[in-house]
Length: 205
Image 1 (spheres, rainbow, N blue to C red):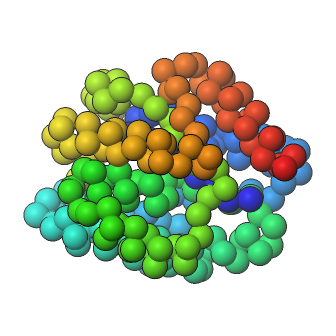
Image 2 (cartoon, rainbow, N blue to C red; image 1 turned 30 degrees about the vertical axis):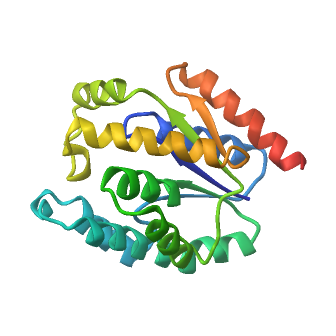
């Protein structure tokens, strides 16, 4: 089974990834947790380039292609082999982030994004994607209240994140069977239980 988590930075998706992975492991599943960009030596090197603040002049097409290159390596080297070994693969960000961030956020055409996503993933898409939905204002509040240093992507202007928010909601409307919207303003436990219920339903099918 292949699952992914999406949302604005600060939405709590990484916490939910960890909770789900732990619960699945406890009942006997082989689970692999991955983050994007990253997960392989090459992909982690690309991540360093993408998030480094000194690269503030990066062109939007360069950004999209680097994210996609990291994903292509991850799919080839890790995700596909792991699925063949019957692992549950849980990815913290995947193609929807490219659609939302580089498509809606940077203004790259959806046709271009779709074509690049198909190449990078070999047309491998998650069975379910959990979009942890919080308002832009809440995402920025959580970021400002945290003591974690922001990276290049996180230092963008508020309007950038509003476009990303709109992008995720657009995807949810277009693909409601795959992408499930979860209210991230609920407590961690409530969000986890909603996700768990959906995952167990997926296993039952």
